[in-house]
Image (cartoon, rainbow, N blue to C red; front, top):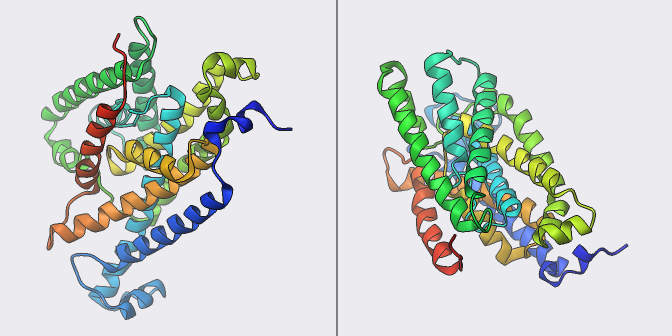
Length: 343
């Protein structure tokens, strides 16, 4: 039976157009993954790539390719997680400025990890991830609570301001913890930028169950997010439990952000840029928008990793720097285009 959601004109987009874009996005992602394996600080031949995929590491070039493969996989998974989390957060808050970095979620995860390292001796990857998820959840709840205060509730402007203020405060707390601990200061300085270097399949395997859970929860929330897009009152009239829907979808996004931040550091702006771009391709129907956000986020982070290796040869730039260069101007553009009524 056709529902009011399915009849809503703002969700209509010919499926044949969406399928065409799906093919394009998959082809681009595959090409970027090939480039990520082929390009680095050391030049390699196609024969070395083929040999490395066959398990050979007889030469330095083949060994270099072998190290790039898990790095590419981690970049794709992290980008997919952040892109999907951004789409979910924008749907939950109905806020075009929502992003794990802008709303302070990534910094909440980072602070939790730093406290765990400094005072509780975190050692295992699972401990990192659970701690990061807890910190991300607390930050998300705090920012939403603060942004909901006053007249008008959680407006986009108030959420963005609350997230920015919270991120600044959390960075100060992190700095205060790290300054007194030289044993973790060096690792924090490199981790805080956000990167995918040093990836191994063991690390990926430890974060994969968390990502799969986050992907499943987020994608299964797509239809309910369509209901929320119609407004809380109409969504409740259609039988949705608005508070539960928001909490479940946000929990999926928090899992994705926490697990990704624990492994890669706080990477910003992927969750902001990607959903807006995907809406131009497939419209605002979350049943299409969220999968496209995951695929496009994967492509963006893989591309950022490749660019970071090219522009700074013979060294490289972390992906967090590249995404900031891309995302900061886009954020300013979104702010200028979004009509926001203040308090």
